[in-house]
Image (cartoon, rainbow, N blue to C red; front, side, top):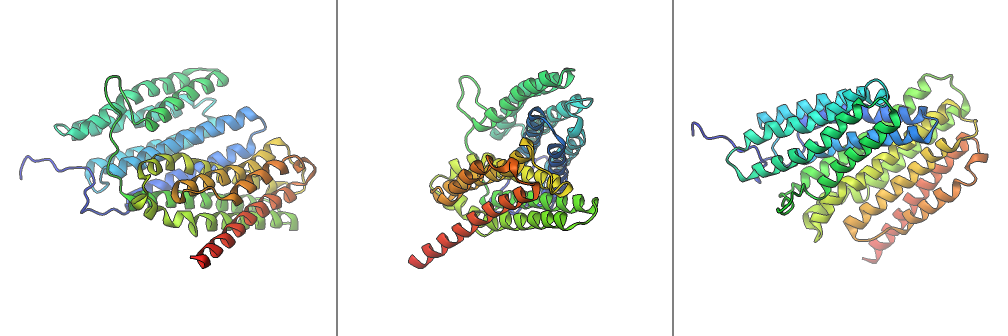
Length: 386
């Protein structure tokens, strides 16, 4: 009817699959992963690693909030498409500013993240005028008004350490508000929306595969810029095997049944709420491993420093922790093989300084491979008993 505005929220009869626009959006996030990995590989201090983790966590918030956004609102509708494209441009700008976010381009990074949050709310609120769904973007805009101010103030500060502290507070506000569903005094937290299990599962599967693509990309680009040698090709092979193992661990196990778990789990709400944090652990672990392999392929026989040990073994431990927590949320169990793998990676840190980088990368690969094999054996035995 003339004058009647179309609903922009998802409907049960509409498509529940991830839209091609969302896949297009993910291309921008690939730049984020690659630049973060390169920044980690180049860092020589723990402060620099902390800065890289904060920047990655911020851009992860861009991806997570956009995924939740397109899970609520249909990307087939024109206002939603414009918002997603605007966020995509903002994410690309933040990625471009990432290498110097604690230098000359701090204001670009912080102000862009604030602008993404404010712009999304300013488009949604009038689009939902007269509907009860309008309360959600209003509350989000209130919270992001606080955090966005901190992001801009941090970007204006000339001292990198002070900027790090202010931005940590701003990121804390963003994550706490998201986790608590944007509460305000005197009102209950926002109710859980009707999630689309198929859409959410696809989005998490896609971003994880994209992270593995970043590992492959970094390995190929690094080797292509160096003279070929047997030790470098050995490190390159270890990177490839690691990528295959990480793919198998997720694609052939818990990741493959994520949609069913969201649909049928008695703890659906908890599963939906914990997925962003669990996948953050896994993706961050993969990025750390990619940064470690970049350094090893460049100098395969060099003794590792503490940073390289943390990137390879710490990255593997982060991935295993995230993978174990995902198993707990999906299957209501903690896989013992993953816990054992975490213990081994931590223990290996004591002997790592005496190993060449190539041996350390092979050790990390063997640990991850052993965990996957142990899980495959357990799965087959369980299937036979069933």
